[in-house]
Length: 471
Image (cartoon, rainbow, N blue to C red; front, side, top):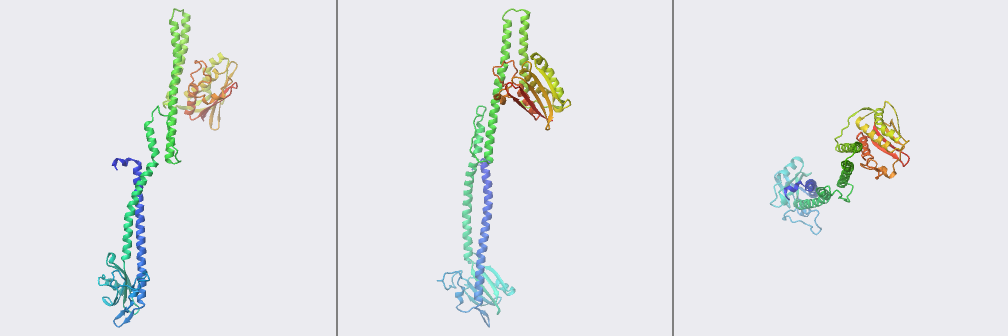
């Protein structure tokens, strides 16, 4: 494995998992080894102690000290041996033994102790001094477990059994652990890499899709059927992000297309009017009429470009709010002053109703623009003899600003799109009837203040726009 592969999260996760598993396995191995060693050693101690009790009951006290009777070798045979092994060979390595001592260093009798037995004098001396003593003598499979204790009639009886079975059992366990542990860790490493690869496969797909995603391929999705875990949530969040980007790109392309079309229409009309005026000699009145139409087209272009600039700056976050205490009544009066000439020409009455001193902390210029757009829109869509009213009041911790008209109303199917850019209820409406951006700007202004805007309308029943701003 190359060192650069360690940058992969699946490799690092597997190695951390392997290290943790290795520590757990080593701790388990240590517990098993220590527990088994204690168990087999306790079993051997019980056997030696039982053998000492059996021999102690048969020891004879003589003038020279305690003596093991002749023929007691059968008592020294292993306690757990099969029934057909009813006596022990004292010359065979590893058989149990027993000895009696009248004093430290003074051996009285010996049963089963072979000549090569390690020195047990230190254990015997402790038994004379302390009453009893345990100890191990020898090494490896030739070691013995020895117990020596004073006899009631005097002297010390020493009994011992070979530790060959204990040593062999522990050696076998060590060999098994040394074989199984590395093999298990190797299997864990392979399995961990496999599982990490499968678990992180969706992330690899996300990475590939992100690398291949361009403005032309935003329609692609992962569409992975994953459980509701971290990786599944990441995949769904990625699909959601791509969907939002796709929608934003589509909106941007549509906005560019619509803006181009909206700009081309007045420019074409402007060019046509100029070409007609230049086509032949005309009188001053005719030139004046052409210039008036050109001026109207220029005004519409200025209005359209201003709206486009406002939305572009808003989308880029370059249109900061300057919040001040503004009197709503003053803003309504300013909006009515602007709309009154058009209202008088169209025979539309204007009315305002609200608390005169009610204030809001908002951007005065933007809120005034919102009111101008709504009032101009209401006047433009209200016929002669109709009325446009503006009301405002504090309600539920918010400022509610309503603009009502008695105009033609809006069809129900058009209401969800009324705040879209360049959207018109009637596509056949003349192009000089607004820019199609006013309500989109109103929506942005309301949301930029932390508020909202809604509309209620029905064909022939008029329209009401409700703006909710924080108090």
